Length: 82
Image (tube, rainbow, N blue to C red):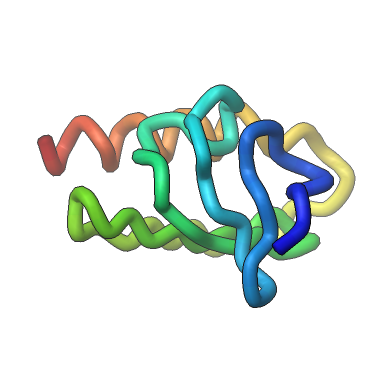
């Protein structure tokens, strides 16, 4: 395992990011132990075993700030399943 180079408080394991603590907008609403991977065009997938939830956001958005949409998406899904 190696420390994640893009998302704070995450580490890499078998090609996935694993959340230690959701301290970044891109991990908003995720529990420790959630794991996932983001694509270069803004798509992402996270699995949160604590909530038994899978987050999938399919996008093709090159060259813009992707964080606000990801943060909003994850917060809405997290609130809906609680």
